[in-house]
Image 1 (cartoon, rainbow, N blue to C red):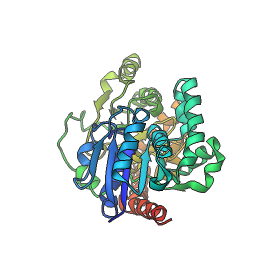
Image 2 (cartoon, helix red, strand yellow; image 1 turned 45 degrees about the vertical axis):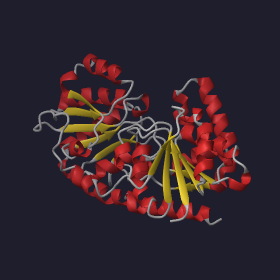
Image 3 (cartoon, helix red, strand yellow; image 1 turned 120 degrees about the vertical axis):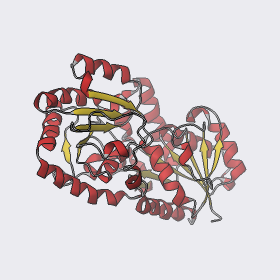
Image 4 (cartoon, rainbow, N blue to C red; image 1 turned 90 degrees about the horizontal axis):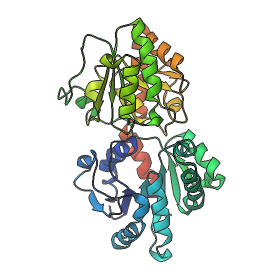
Length: 374
């Protein structure tokens, strides 16, 4: 317990990386003096941080503006390891570490949560180029890198092949002991649509990455064949655009945007099928969570993550990204083939156990300890 770890990220917003982080914190604190540095103490997952974990608000608003406050925090705390999460926090941490004298410099472990070369294409070309260059230059400063899937690892090596000896693949923690309890709660902040109508559910930020445009177009075909409702949990900048598209498609009475839900599992449990329509991912925590809620999963075989979780036809269905026809046909098949739906549920219930937080947290603990002892 005398070894100290400082975890650094911008905030604890409602994404998969942040959820994974708060899931493993209770286990890390049993082995390390655990501190959490945030640019700003905000986000729905702040309340899930264990009281034994000290939170430091270092300012800077965004990670890349917090380099000097992070240097000061590191010098004051003197952690043995700094564990950074998310690309901007990783770059800021690498720069901060480089400004600390070698004698008191902690080990730096960078966690990569997305397929960066694909993810950054959604940004402005110049910004994309600068960030990729910074990754190539600064990530080698780290003593170790955690990639959350094999696909993320391969992508990092495309950016800088010299990182190979430093990369460790550790999947995200997609399952914990709380999910089976939460999914049976009935504290809906927003009421569900007609429970007698089959429900398709999707969950994630309303951004281009999640491919909701293709899901809405596929759903427009589905309800021409069968009665169904589509529930989307999440917030984001594309909400108005997606609402307008549902109106254009004439499906607005069957599509429900319910916003961010701190307990999405009570909604998932009521669904007939879960759909992840992403164009790219890093891992796809929500796939594991849906499996744990006992619903069949359809996911795009996008770069990267879903194809490493799902064995097609066994514990879920994989389809090409941005393929409306495949998406609507798969949804229709699961809604009408009860035998297949049951098979996928059973396979998913088994597969999700491989990503239980107890297993994943132990992998983190072993990896971090191995660096402390070097």
